[in-house]
Image 1: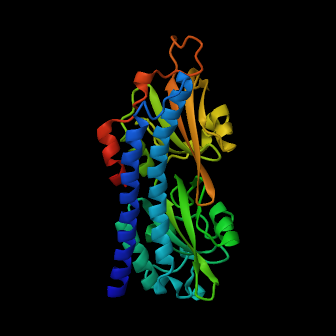
Image 2: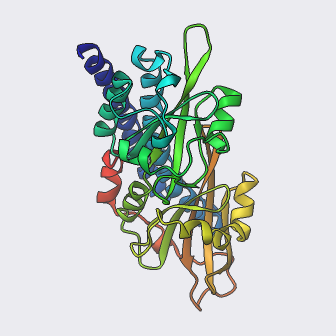
Length: 332
C-alpha cells in the first residue's frame, strides 16, 4: 500500500506542476491580450479579430492542461505493476459485464484512488486487447452496461492501432446514456506487448462549470465542440452538455461555415446566421491527443453594424473579468 500511495502522490505532484505552469502562462498571455500596443493594426477589424483569438487561446491553454493532467495520470497508472499484471480472463462473467467486484482487487484499488483524487473522471475502465470490458469502476457502472465489448468505439480502434494515448469524440455512454468523452491510453509491458487499454470517462459538467465561470457578457456565448459538431461544454447556464440531445443537435454547429473553416485548420471571425440571428462567430481549432477540438465564440450582431465585417466594438473586447482570469488555472 505504501508503494501505491507514493506512486499516486507522484501523479498528483506532476499534475499540479502542469496546472501551475499553465496558470502562470495564462496570466502572462492575458496581460498581452489586453494591451492595445501589442496588437496595433491599421485595420480595426483585424485588430479585433486578433484580440478575440488571443482570448480564446487563453481558454484553449486551460482546456489543454486539463486533459493533459488526466492523460498523465492514466499513463503513470498504466505503468504500475498492479495494472501491468496480466488480467485473468477466467474471472470474466458476462452476466455482470466483466469481473466480480471483489476480483483483481489490486487493479481496482488503483482505479478507486484515481477516481477519489480526480473528479473530472466519472469512471475508469480496463479493456482487454479484443475490446472486452475487464472491469469498470465504480462497479455500479459495470452492472449498468448494455454491452460488454467496446471494440467499435473510436478510442479502442485508434489506441489499438497507434499504441498511443487518444482523446475520443463525444459518445453516448453505454452505462448511463449520457454524453461524454474518453481519454484512453495503452497498457504496455516491458516487452512492448499491449496488455489492454485503460481509459477514463470525462464528465462534461466540468466543462460547463468552467465556461460558465467566465461570466461572459449577456450577448456572448462560448462553446466547446468536437470535430463532429457535438457540444462538450457551454457557457450558457441554461444549457447542459451531458445530455444526449447534444448529439441530436450537432447539425446546429456542424452546418456553420465557421465550423467548416475550423475543420480545415483555420481560425478567425466571420458573420453568419446562428439560431435565426446574425452573429459574429470567432473560431479556434486545436489538436489534442490525436483528435481535434473547436472553440466557437458567438456574439449577436445589432442593427448598428453599418456593413462592417465584424460586430464587436473595441470597448467590448474584454470578454473575461480580470478576477476570473487570475483563478482559471486552479479551476480544475
